[in-house]
Length: 177
Image: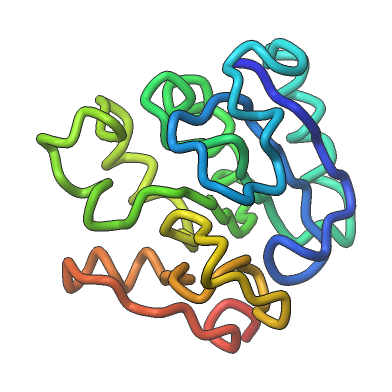
């Protein structure tokens, strides 16, 4: 897997001050995507154990509220495999974990959907706190929305969603106290 960017003090992609990893590779190609260069799986730098260790080091710092993974598309099957260890290391630190995906939760839970469902999908979904799901839709673009780019996208509380096996919207007060 390659990655395009790592933001060490991101306040736009989840609550608080977070470390955000922008992975490379996306087959969806949403019109109006703000990060088109990350569609190419070869874009950016190789994601290595050293990269992962550096991200973990930032998560251990005082004032870091969590990890956000976006892209590109983190839930492309080949990206899931590389992200699996990072997610579990971040979980062990007790950090909140957000993943942005152009796939909906329903697509990700469909074991027959090989576009996004691989051996790690269910485990990753169980390990993250929030999934911001759905493709960016230019015709529904709304810059006033917090933590998402278009009105069709949902911010889902994954623990609660998986308990009832249907999408449950995230409420900020749940995560922050």
